[in-house]
Length: 221
Length: 216
Image (cartoon, each protein chain N blue to C red):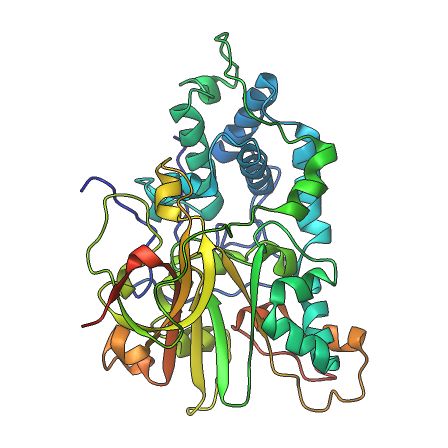
């Protein structure tokens, strides 16, 4: 298995205390809002989709060392380089190369920003009917997969209950690999704290849910 | 790749007197990226300005506070919000990017909700704006699903021992908004006054709404 996500942090010990911040404090350096906007604007071109950008971020070897906007910036460069939209050395020299640039499906113009943000990118699609019913007990797939997935490791192999059914949505796993949307039923699956964490002191009177696509689920026997 | 001496889960500049006029390697890198992409015709720099302005001045947690205040004041709206959050929230003018599929969850005397994205930074942008740094940090993402009471303690929140904690890990494109408990003694307040009691953290579940008179 060559795909390795560094972002699957749920339940990992040793990361220390959370450091709260005041409500208005969103950026810690002048470059951060610019990196955010560059990422959003390039995402709007259609050169890749959101699942591809999540895959690019979570597999950065430096993930654990980078700040969050650092992760976004490095992943943006990577997505651009992989598609030939940026040439090696261009950022270091801050000069565009003379090579002809591929044409993108769209460019986000200032006049379209409000409309694009208001529209967003809904992921609900027509698709197959759900195989599981609300209230049913399911087991989450035990094995890892060699590609981007949204099934966190802490839930793998665990028994949960279907808490809600949301119709079919774009399947992140196939979308991230460039295999198309392949919509499939999406559920909220709830687990008891004890199922996830045994007799951990924090697991008492705790219920945790994830949102899981049908391919993540197995029938319990 | 540029070197960045930051640590996951910690503020980028703990000294608190960071000089924003200093040009660091990341400033240069992001500027160079913008220069090259602009020359290519891939981005409109004016669109970047507008995106930044939107999330610094127009789309933030005051939107969500209005939603919560309406739910507190209007039982019909509260029922709608719990049944179809996307539509109820859109009726107040908030919709779109990172809030396409909303779900509202309500705190009660016996149940406290907490929202996290353990895999990245999924967050309901139309109602809360951009996520704070701690929400994207390793300490929060790792502990929220395993030791939520410990996380709440980091925020100075201690719940009764018997309260059930319900954690929502945003692993797909559903986005969660917590409706905090309406504080005691707020019966006489109008919606605008109620909204002032609603903090960003109370809508993530890491805080409680302010008591009347205690709001800063």
